[in-house]
Image (cartoon, rainbow, N blue to C red; front, side, top):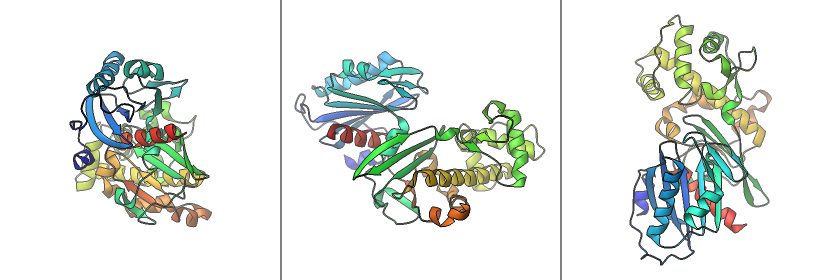
Length: 347
């Protein structure tokens, strides 16, 4: 069962317990996407069942929670739902799914005593709370991440950032909007690229400067903008709009000079932003890349990436001292929601 769950593919594993036998010893965790939701059943702290269902409308999502609880036969002790969007007063605005989900809604649907809605990068940060050397590829530093504050960065549809702060033997999370910090040209030859991007997405620049929201280059949404800007700067104003996946594939196989250049800018700016953020939170427990883009494109995170990460002027040595890792955990959103749940119930 555990081997099947570790593959990361949507699975549905039959529960070992007969209906009604779990009582209050199970929790329900959800990782909510714009299209699909993963529902995890956690028995005595361990993930024992993983389901995938369409997110749909709010009634459809709540019905999926209700049906799973009815199948098991008892209400969960706690439910944690993680998704992309801001959390205010016990309600999360799920921007990808275009719905509002409250803790009260979840309690009504499941009968749980404890319900929590959390941002997806709160969950991402919690996913590395118990991470081991077996769960990562070390790009820099100790093969096994040491204890300490941890920084998590996920270049996916957007650019997610979370921090797991370590204080007095306990972890606490801080999530923010990492995709909206500023990017500026790092070299003279990048000025033309940023000027071209300003013609494509002027609303994403900071005032009259050449400083751009990081998400507009460093994400699946932003890579097509970066690719077009590279083409325009190279004198090709009719550069097509290509999906991020196609851009990265063309860069990897060397078939498209514009894609190669876009990938190089992506790599160095991502490394630099991660290094800057590391200096602000001092992640002695490591810096982690999470998500499918990082896992499927390891080739992006080589010498150029680390050189940009470690280029800190007078703080080169400080940045070089941080461990940098690619998380290899399947279903990191579910893992993080479970770790958050365990911590919340322990309090």
